[in-house]
Amino acid sequence: MRDFKDKIAFLPEPLRDRCIKAGNETGWRKNDVVDVIKHARDSSLATLGGQIQYRFPDATCELYWLSYDPSSRRPNEDWTSYCQRSAAEAISKFRNLPDPAEIREHAKGFPAIKDKLEQGIDIDEYQVFILYFVDEVRYQTLGDSS
Image (cartoon, rainbow, N blue to C red; front, side, top):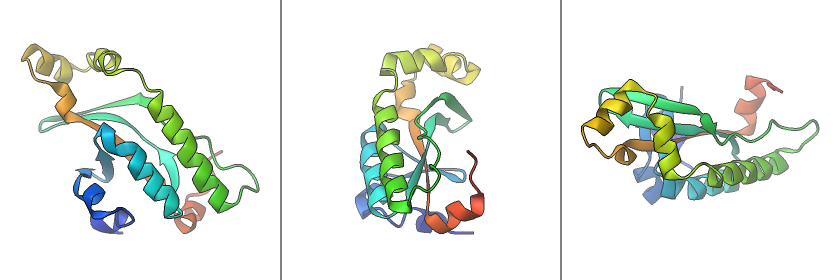
């Protein structure tokens, strides 16, 4: 299995330094997401998408329904085209996520978040945007889920 640092080696150091390790997942703050996706695309990685998480020391709350997943690889789509299209679709969906107030409203359904809000904690400080990427070799071993 690849080391965490290998997983994000395609990124320039400033973006690697801002990566938030979330178990086996990697995430970034909102302001970094588009740059990370573009670097992945330019490194011949397809973007599989991601979702918003709130990562507290004592809890993780995943807003899986607020994802920015591109559509599956199309039949006969070459790898370079898929990398470009998946990045463009993920960026478009990411940019069309609800505004921060609406995201916080969605998050209130989690007891851990409701407690944090009642304590006056700024939950946005704990917001992480998880991203998934894959290279062509690994993609072939995953099989096409479409």
